[in-house]
Image 1 (cartoon, rainbow, N blue to C red):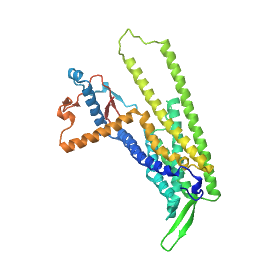
Image 2 (image 1 turned 60 degrees about the vertical axis):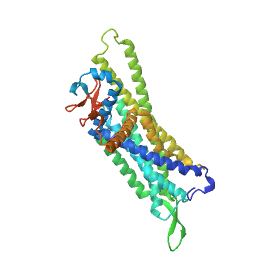
Image 3 (image 1 turned 120 degrees about the vertical axis):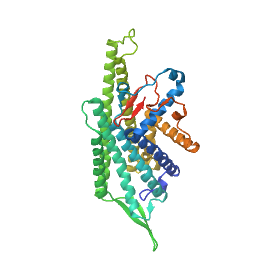
Image 4 (image 1 turned 135 degrees about the vertical axis):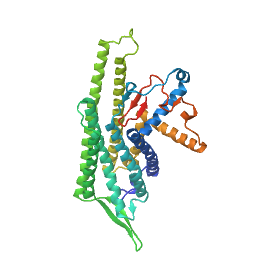
Length: 398
């Protein structure tokens, strides 16, 4: 299957390319929808944090029944509550990338499958123009967002006292980038549409590459900007890597010069603070690794697609390889982000629990006596559990 520029005989792999794109669209839709849903719930819903706390209490009770019976009830006070250390800007950028992938799964991939199966012929000129416009807009927008993310992570790690992007600034930046890309593309991008056959009933058009100096210039500008943005991403993440190595070497030297006192008390406030800082640093590095893997995979796949299309290659799957990233990105999120995996498991548990309670007309576990319950404070918590709260005054036991 091909468009006007390439005949069918020049391609190989067309028999399995469209099924792969279809599977990627279906799996990518559900995966990206779950990622967006979880990040939005974690940022906005206090009820979701309450569900997470009760679920954690239930797990703790099931694992430590004997210890729980000997512990007294703990009331959530400012002494055992600490602020959540999650970075809202990083979460916002993950939502933006997942939204871009979701648009690819809903619009771009189905449109590509339909046009490829019809040899790039359509009954509407708008379909040809919309396909080429979205195909050029979404990857370029994702590439610019990844460059902004790399710069933000560089400032966040290498210059922590210089707060460059807040959540509001990040939102304004993304909207401005989308506007500045969409307007020039809509005014200058063109495709060549020819009449494949004509009759009194309807006309079919064949979509092809646009001709003219403006279209060619815009295409080469896309390639140049893509190369520049990828270089910026590599430079920023390389600087982050060097900074992390230097800080680790410095921390190792400090530990060698000041060994911990094991003869004294086993738990101190200083040790607790060091553990909290180490956990915070590990979360930051895990987030940076996740975003770097997304940028790296996108750069490789989109670069291969550009090379194949510019050289008029014969592999249809390679020319559409960047579309498969809509399914790969959520896999990267789930592989690196343990909290995201736990939240997806919890969503499945809550759905099953809701269906079970609605069918049997039963009360929640805590009301059945499976958890020690108090009307004043809710389910009891084990001593020593750390409770987190975020800006909307919701709590999370970790």
